[in-house]
Length: 84
Image (cartoon, rainbow, N blue to C red; front, side, top):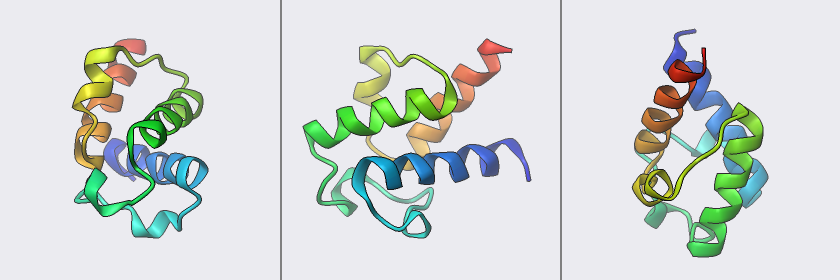
């Protein structure tokens, strides 16, 4: 399992926690428009889940960029590489 696979698996779990959806429905291609609960309030819930799962802190600019799973994985990957 490479780093992106590990991050994606944990992002899927964060989506399950935030939106109560099957994690297998979440892929790198998933965007906010694919999940009805992913609105502004859902976005904050998702951010909280991501911060908890990965032990990171997201800033406002990063939250604004998180419009797709691909962007989330990129941001989390960058955060984790700086954390080590």
